[in-house]
Amino acid sequence: MGKTLAYKILEDHLIEGNLTAGEEITIKMDQTLTQDSTGTMVYLQLEAMEVDRVKTELSVAYIDHNTLQTGFENADDHEFIKSVAKRHGVLFSKPGNGICHQLHLENYGKPGKTLLGSDSHTPTGGGLGMIAIGAGGLDVAVAMAKGTYSLTAPKVVKVELKGSLQPWASAKDVILYVLKCLTVKGGVGKIIEYTGEGVKSLSVTDRATITNMGAELGATTSVFPSDENTREYLRSQGREADYTPLAADPDAVYDEELIVDLDQLTPLAAMPHSPDNVDSIANIGQIKVDQVAIGSCTNSSYTDLMKVAAILKGRKVHPDVSLVISPGSSKILAKMAENGALADIINAGARIIENACGPCIGMGQSPKSGAVSLRTFNRNFKGRSGTLDADVYLVSPETAAISAVKGVLTDGMESRESLPDIKMTDFTPNDNFVVYPKGFDKSNTDVVMGPNIKPFPRNTALPDSISTKVVLHAGDNITTDDIMPSDSRLLPYRSNIPHLSNYCFEKIDSGFSERCKAAGSCTIVGGDNYGQGSSREHAALAPLYLGVKFVMAKSFARIHRSNLINSGILPLVFENPADYDDLELGDELIIENAPKQVKQEVIEVKNLTKDKTYNMLPNFSDLEINMIQKGGKINAIKEG
Ligand code: MIC
Ligand code: SF4
Image (cartoon, rainbow, N blue to C red; front, side, top):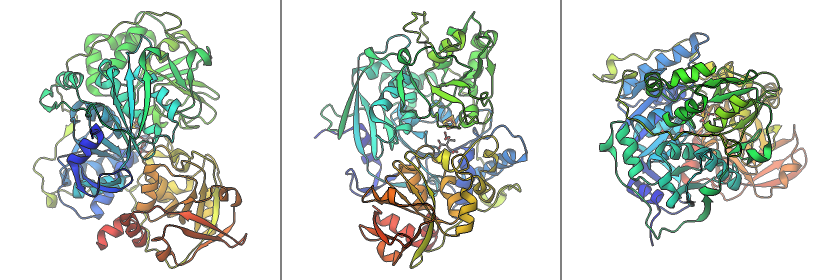
């Protein structure tokens, strides 16, 4: 029986377990990446594990999220990360170098390698034929310490690409179409593997746009074959030696299949407030646009921005539109400065901001009240832009640029606008933004900690019985942005859980943290796909700090479920989803004989207020049971 590409790479890295979907496996992690807003926790945890040099082939610490530096906090975090990186043999990418995923693709990603990143969009590396997985910070810290990562072996979905994209249809439209078909929870427990003739028509950066937004499907990761386009991309970055051809066997067997006919795709948009709320721009119509933001790890590559520059050249941004552009990397920005494209963009009336995440995570450029904002980003969750009543639409760079000129959402294909063919260019390697951990000597390198960096909360061993109060009854698709909001006001406090916890669930229920403090020991009730979105473990650590002991939901998103377990909080799934409706705010719950029950297939949660018992499914692996019993991953590692 032929093998999928995903399983070939996993097999090459298998250390423990049976490589069958649903089984727990441990794989070798060749590379890790961190970014700063999750990175401070990662490196605090790495320090807590008392390891010396990292065990990976390559680990990189990027600074790209918190670059506004409105106070001392961000800069202190950067120094902290730099000092720990040096101590442990980690490369440090200075602020201003660019967005972690774009930079990793350009400089370090290699076909056939594994990568674990403390950011949910790490699967961007799948565009180069890597198995690149997003995870919580603690999992990444452990991967650095041990060079391994444990996960449930996913199913593999084949997405067969036929034909080739027509002008104005873009890689972004491919993934928006897949999101429309599979939804934001359709990828949970799965790897999305792209195959078919159409693959050849997509460049590595197109592919990376698609694998990047596979995160929005909830997928473990997404992967493309490594072929001549991969060689060409690596060559353009001066790294042809890193090329290896890779593909699935022609008779590979997949768990599910989806066919996408690229010829038929037209420009699409994800409408407010979910990346799977997708329709064609022709159907949505010419709505008036107030802001257009181009950039983010999804669509800030050289070719993306060159297309934008070509569309804007000699034209004027509409008087009612604010167009803001954040390039993906310093190399891209420098190249566009050299070839004149930057001048074309600026002359059209665009605002150029730093090569960083910026507006994608609400770090500046929040749109006006009630605005319509078109963004080439990957998430349009309500309030993520920093403006609660803004309507954010996710679109391709081509659609964003032409709409910025016209002032209305525009389908370039329908309006028969001309679109120049953009070619990739060669880059001169430049590592002036990189600090190497040369002369590594732990004893000579002090960890630099600013006053905003507080110890992270640690759980205690599982007690005999757990008594709690329901403090929140939430709906479906609760995002980690809902649980632990992040914007320019809160991001500076990513190293300060006591402070952040005051804002937990702030945007959907401002009384949450006070209610937790009053209850002391708490339960959150959620619907389907609880915890979708980012990898931020702050969405587990802040609830831990506030006394949350277990979360009851219809289903969980992968990374958040792991983060809860890593923190010693129990994620429990309703055996009977109708029990969800029965629970109410203030209900008093109890799990008796907890250490025994966590080993069982069903855990009984008694509702003392309503005199009822709910059967909950833990679905814990042996490793997870150990962590839950010890009160989280760090305790489990320290106690052995
Ligand atoms: C995001 O896009 O939501 C983030 C900010 O990059 C997060 C990480 C974080 O919260 O720091 C992610 O995607 O994991
Ligand atoms: Fe940064 Fe946005 Fe990408 Fe997250 S999704 S890594 S905030 S650019």
